[in-house]
Length: 414
Image 1 (cartoon, rainbow, N blue to C red):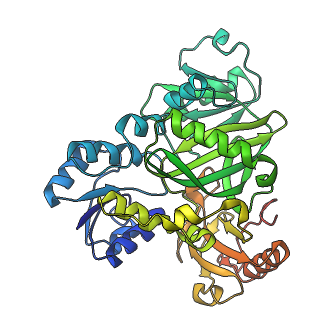
Image 2 (cartoon, one colour):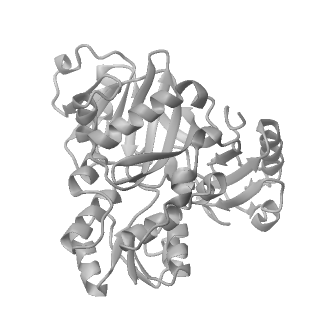
């Protein structure tokens, strides 16, 4: 069968490889000619994942049997529209895809459906000060339709909002932005699968972020199990089910981000996709549920084995794992660790670099500057810490002077 994958970045490589292993012909749409996923695909098209018309043309050209994306937010809407136009299997309806990829619709649905979220406003560039009345500072400003923390800033005044407005819009196709109160909190992420409107929770992880004001919310690590799971399990399950119902999510993967603070649980954002922190790799290891396989088969209209999903119990999962999405200081790359040797270390599942020798690493502004990833498991909390420390001791990105550029910010080792 022929499968169109929207995006050829590192988050889509595993999906491309898996679909090929399953015997499918894979076509990749990506506006980068050297997108890494194109190396593994049968066909690469120089088409943006945002370009609906061109992706429909690609689908017709190759007479595709299915279309999907993974690990990234915005192409979810393109997938739904292409599937609808070409009468292909689709896990969610177009209206749902729009709601989970546009923060204005998302936030308004939170409010309408009684889903807890922080106080917010949607404003245009010529907004008046009075439109922000009742909103506490500092605030976080975001584009309505972007991803990877692009155009996201922590700001302390109305004047700062005005000065950053054009920059936020530079990452958006909309003419408005989201302004929401900053909630002092810890973050958690929820991964799961929905079948016929019923939610099956798979993991709840602690999401550790890098604070580099005015840049905010850049993820550097995930830890399973979440330290908040025991206390908030019932509420996480209730709120997540409320999201599924309110957004009319019928089938497929879900990825919800929530905040835990003094005022309780707040929903930050929701998505109908596999997470971008290599959940397609670690979920089968942690849960026995191969969510990537399920996504590929479902997107092609093939039958899916639901037994692992129905028999898994999150509350009974005693495994430990961390995903490290590490960054590096600015500099030109001269040397890198041997990944094969790194993968031989205790607990290391996989690892990879986003830069190669000769590349220039720039300043950290958003998630696109990540230097690489490292997935490590342990028998318990202490064993996980030991395995992480050993792996990072062998992890190197060296500059011209031989200095290791890898950053270990606060929180990387829980």
